[in-house]
Length: 274
Image 1 (cartoon, one colour):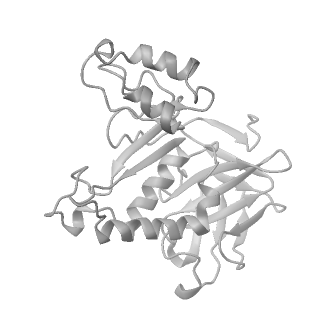
Image 2: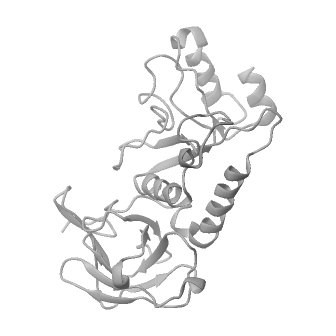
Image 3: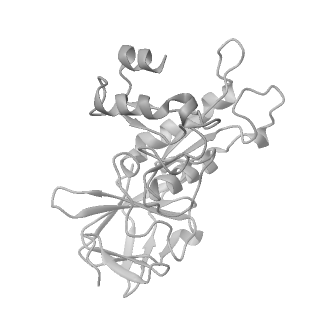
């Protein structure tokens, strides 16, 4: 059936959940050899790691390891967090309560953390017996789409930065993206609006020539560079003028250095060690 699916639909991703039983029973090696060498998608396809007992977190284009895999730090191999909006079930539950469902704030936080640490995220919902998606799940996806419409630049086609979680603020995660000048743009994902609108960053150090903006608004933050770290006065915005109601992204272009005490090194955005 897998051969037929690949030949017929030519998928970019083949996601296997066959981690029960030896790979010899599933003939995983034979299928993967065909998939990567002969199949019509051999040049583009990627796979996960669940191809038999003992293969998870060891073999695959990306590792899904276990359900809700969330290492919380940068990994040496591409990985994925396969999770569900219902914290207790992959399927539809009529007795699910509101507390069982991820809040949009928590979902965005998990997305930011996952991408910052170099992972993909797979978000599952269980449909009803007649194929409907419950309104609460529709709302979450709509909210996530609204957030990504404004801030997707900090998520799509990004790579991990020198630092992932800020050393002075646990509610800040970083991503980065190459710019046209061969340097990197750094994205600062702020999960909670700081007290008195003053954001103190321990892992990001900028210079006077560095430009910091907020995605989704022309209002500019005020930046105070420090020898180590940065202070950002967030834009003066009333709730109706905020780009989104949940989580905000600062875009940093120009000279920037990342300092991560747990790595004990300081590097520029080009990766040079100081």
